[in-house]
Amino acid sequence: MQIDPRQPTRKNPPEQFTGDVWLDPIASPREPGQHMVVARVRFAPGARTAWHSHVLGQTLHVTQGVAWVQSRGGDKVEAHPGQTLYCPPGEEHWHGASPDTFMEHLAMLELGDDPATGTTWLEHVTDEEYIR
Image (cartoon, rainbow, N blue to C red; front, top):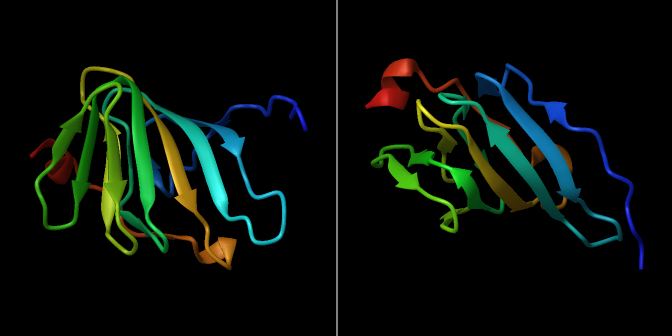
C-alpha cells in the first residue's frame, strides 16, 4: 500500500479554460500499462473548459453545484450532484459551471499509450455558445 502526500491545488491554464478553474490531482498512472487519471476540478460561476476531446473518452461525476455540459452539435445538458456523464472517445465537448454557482466534478479518463495526445484541446467556448 502507498499513501500519497497531498499535492497542491493548481489553477488551470487560460489557454484551455475560461474563468477560474482549479484542479486537485487524485490518481495517475503508477505502473506500466496503467492509463487512468482522476482529478477533482472546481469551476467558479461561469467558468468552463475550451472545446476538447479525449482519445479514450471521459467520465465526469458532479459532486457540487450545477454543471453545464455540451457535445459539439448537441444540446447543452445540466447535471447536479450525484449525476455522472460520459463523453465517448473523440467526441468534442465542453463542461463548466452554470453562471450563478460554483461547480465541482471528478474528471476521470484513460490517457492511452501517449499521455501527450490523450486530450485534444480546441478553441474556447464563446459566451454565445455558453449561454444558449
